[in-house]
Length: 157
Image (tube, rainbow, N blue to C red; front, side, top):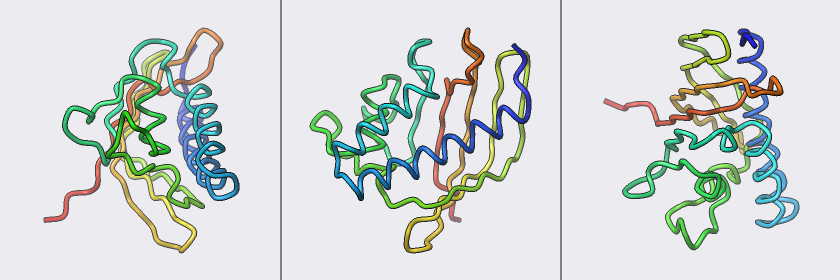
């Protein structure tokens, strides 16, 4: 099942809309509501059911830098985790909009990679720019799954 450029753009939009939905769930219903939405989002478009996801979040460090399990991703997105006490909850920061600015794509059959900037805008209008790399694989149902997610803040010389 060949991945297309439209598939990648759609996947980026779905990822951004997921962060917005998690933020709104947190504001409307607290941490339990945010966790439920985040868990459903992770199940819908990450590839944890295919194996470990190569996930390196922006604000993770030490022994918990890498998040190859769903539990690690959920803690990063929502915070409030005894197992990941340094996580503040990236996805509960009041996000309202997301734009992606591609640098490059690589597509080969059912595997693709994307690299560029993601700009997230919070409810106060503040924009956060993050360097992102996503690796995708289509599963047996044709759903594009994130199997690699690397994130970092741009270098400030």
